[in-house]
Image (cartoon, rainbow, N blue to C red; front, side):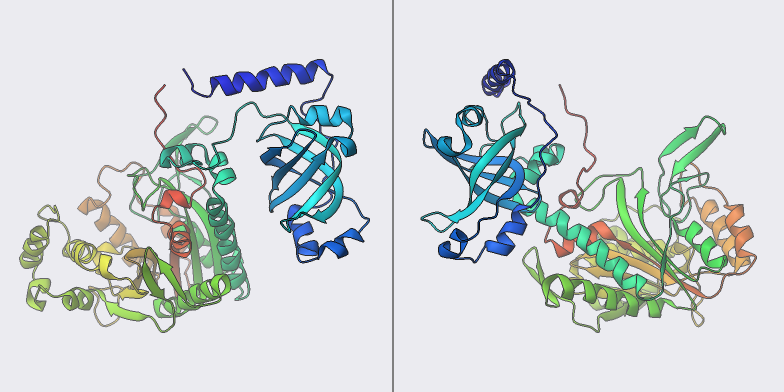
Length: 494
């Protein structure tokens, strides 16, 4: 039996009583003219004698979060979108009928109140209610105040309660919105155009990932939720939109962890006549702008580690980064068999025959990435793991590409884009032949993109930044589920 059933039954009896009295349980005629924040900002520092001179009445509405009942009077706190304020409800002032309704109200109900302001003996700004109105009667009690909502899975499943009773959770999502606003502000000021590209695609290109598959009845065709918007954004650069970005939702039918959710948010941007080095500078400037604006400083603390965003950030070629960690000599890294054996010695389960570049990136991931705490750009990745990147002019087995790591997490991936349609076709074919996409549905040559590329794309730099991971960093959140309002979860067992 649900342990809440006695409390729910008690509330249902109150509801029946209110109905018999003719009280409307869900009216929609009350107008809240102010928020709690409006009153606190205007009168939060006003002394009692100044408040006594204010004859104006104020109307606010919110959810009842606490009740201290003294018989013919009560102090309550109501909470709206911007904060809380105390309300003093007296029988003699609001009237016998209204007070009778009030006595049947519970924590969790919504109430509208109109009244004047004063300060209590404890100096708390308080509304002295002249009139009150029940706006919504709740049937279920909120989590108990002192124990709150602690169970992690319950918090994610019932995020609405999590937001109500855990103030830091609301702060995370307010900051998330602010971060995205700052990204837009930064890019808009640099002549980037925000665009939208298809979320349902006939070919899920732009990343090597297993897509979600759906079906369109009218067109009698399979479609895939996008794994990345890259190939569509490049089409726009070809079409003359030389600086574009999209804050986009991507979907990858893969594992779930503290770092991964099947549905996630990314910023993807493209800048004509720019290189991967230009984008490293742009990224440095943008993240410094966001951090400085949010915190007033370029230092933050993440999970106990001090992160210093002060530029310039370290830049290391991938092989140099591996060699600096030690334990392997340059000759071993250059040799396929030596690299493979070294990777296996690290416990990385690699099959024979995979590209040498894949082995190198796996070694990086195992031995180097977790130690990249301060902002660090790792550059010049192997060509065979970078099918959309431009080859390096001096070392064609490498590409002009970077990944940004902060606190051991990959936050951004960018490169000088491959704009040679012949080379692009060869790389797509090689990727398919090597089985890099495995049995992932929908992966085939995107002939339409190659056709567009044959019209010519200017030299371009492109980049993706994981919004969720960036928010994790800037809100000191250990899990990606803490920064996604409704993360994907298994259905609850009944």
